[in-house]
Image 1 (cartoon, helix red, strand yellow):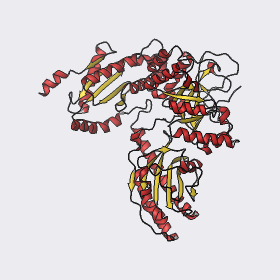
Image 2: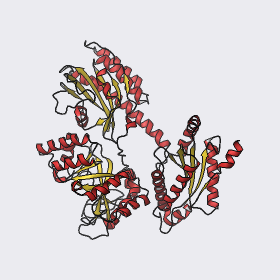
Image 3: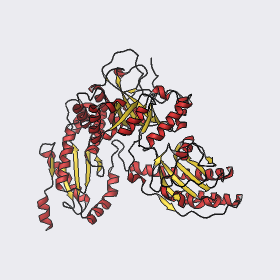
Image 4: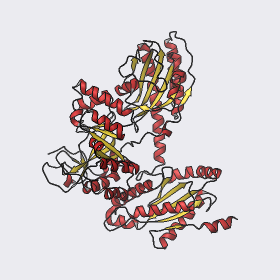
Length: 607
């Protein structure tokens, strides 16, 4: 027998039992904080060649795993049925960026596979390369194809705890891939020792028995060692979105003046007064920028320094984002991200404890601050991870010119400030998260009507100032009661989640999708006129029709009304009401259709 199931989970399957073809999902975790970031799709029965049944099972499960990435075998699927596999992605309403196709290093010698991968990447999909060993040929393939992920063979991974050579190979690989924006995933993290060794080297992502067994949602698919779970398991283990690095994520670094301070010893009373002032200023602060500003203002009073940087840990991109800089020496860091696995900062952050580096030039993990490659002066550095409970939020870096310039007392004082700042920053993040949840529909993850009420006046004003237009689509799922009556409320919930996925996949990234109530959805198409709004509405209608039925023989169709602000009303509320009227006309006309408010009549009335 395999792994014992937890509460609410079915027992695992027996080894050797032949089951129908399908898929298991092996969770991929961010090792330091155990957040799920992806699922590798494994064939069941184990050892079967990948096929369309594997894809169907994986895409069925995707409604529960999103926004985690699905890592799916490439070979055996795309040899002759590439079009069918790609069509399945569209039918299930899956965002292409949530699928990464796994290929081997032989892609470098296979022009046909290379052509398939290029086409898929052009369509928005990601891909991963399997590296069978630490071989330099894998490096060549990575450099040539720039995959999104590199999968390390379990045999190599399990050498890391006991082999200095394997640790050196991995460290070099981390440094190499970081410069190419390739994320490494270690397979075979089967023991705590392996997980600890990987984290010590700086590797973030992995899968294996120590982290989680493979998961199946159908008992008939379970192999020995699999865990049978239901949809509720995925809701309890919400994944973290692993987005590519976006340039706009790094805009907003605050650069402040660094307070000049003498190197004279600071008295205990002065330290106590400064800490008390910091606690008073931060206790009810909900703005992270002001929290960092307090640190930059008060910390130099007790610890003279030449430069200071506060970096936020962006776990979605495995990057540090500079949020506040003080001192001319670090000005080049402004709006420049860099990987968590790189440099002394990344090394100390992975250790999770304050670190006093007496000479940054001689440390084994030393890197170069972007833009300062020609500056090689001796300097000392304090690296203080900003940790609140189990939450690693970021890191505080402090520099001083010269070797061995910081004392252990300096390290302790800096750690005290960091502790106060991390607690305040964490509370600010919790406050923002509560606000976000209040504006988000729990079932679909879309905006809710509270969000809509708050943003509509601002969006209307912005649109009028710009002389632009907003296309408004209001849609209602046809015969939704039949889905609930036939398949139960679980089927209805599943259908609503799938509709939300399809809507997000059809509209542009800058457009907004709102769950308007029950089975009604509202779409705001920014900078879109009547023709564009009708075109998107037809794409939405067709995409919903092509969805797999939520219950047998019941297609998901929608009646869609279209109106445009400010052509059909002086306020967005008025335009939404006009789209609502068009939607009811679509229902009365036979459903599964788009009806748009007439533009000519509206223009004639205005003139």
